[in-house]
Length: 401
Image (tube, rainbow, N blue to C red; front, side, top):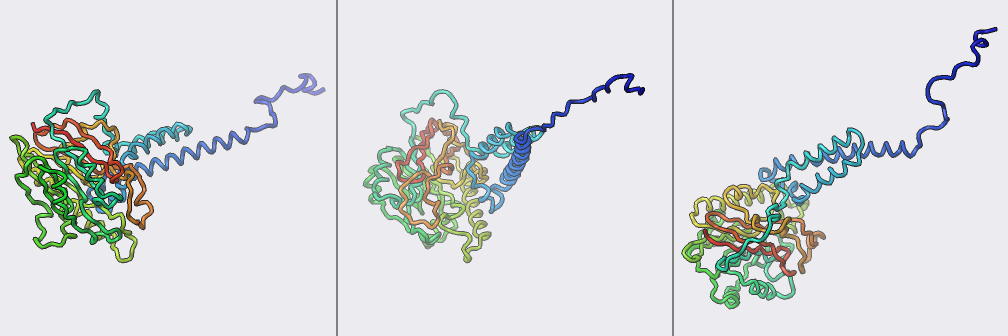
């Protein structure tokens, strides 16, 4: 007789019983997918953070930064918030890493997104009857972007502004780049349409004012032009028209601005005759000189000032930093939470080689208004162009003091 016979049957083995079944395959696949999803999300968040840091460091300092600045500024908030929301679907420590990197990617651009938190204030500011009404508008090559050239005049007259600041009041031949600009000589027509107004024209810029013009100082790159410069050279370097207006007992300086475009929409930098580095460097230097010339004049100008126009710069570009240091952004008086001013739908009659050129993509704001000195802004709006330009007109109501 053995010990086993005395003890009876052997004790059952410890541990869970063997059922002959393993974890379902779909669960293993789902777990693997969530794991790879988390790693992919982390990789995207790292790439966005790297892009945003480099963009922030380069903008306004490097001539190639225009390629980094092309992203609509609202994406600087939208993309990190989207990544943050998507991180909830990751699992394990990858969820925490993805969320942390998404939040880190928000920081370099949160103040450059163009979101106007002042729009959340309750109530509207009253506009006194004595306030001066300014309309600033890039007319998109005056009369060339629609079949009725007089429509823009009728549109402006309906606005009944005290001061009009018009940019791109010029003829341009598509496909000719920087050499295809020609002046418009329609002062007599403008005077007939705006009787009693004072008209000042230089380069592509026209200022129409109910108030008397007491001076038109020339400064910055425009002051370096020879008297007999051809129009294309004038167009390229004369980008700010200052008119000093007599408003009541005060002299107000009004700056009509159209900063040089960072790249021409009809120019392919891939053409063999184009040196991309030299091209972007020249455009960058011109833009810097125009803004700095404006800033220098503002700092030497004792008059209350209005600075408005097409700056060809978004809220995320460092181009406007020198101006923001000496002037106040009128957007604080706006009720637009996300103001956009460019690439709105307009009847473009041009024939573009670039298929994206004529598409409405209203994701950018490049039109701005600033004030300097004792100026009170009562209201600021970006209004409809009524299908007459891809830029929305800016409306400003202000008082001196």
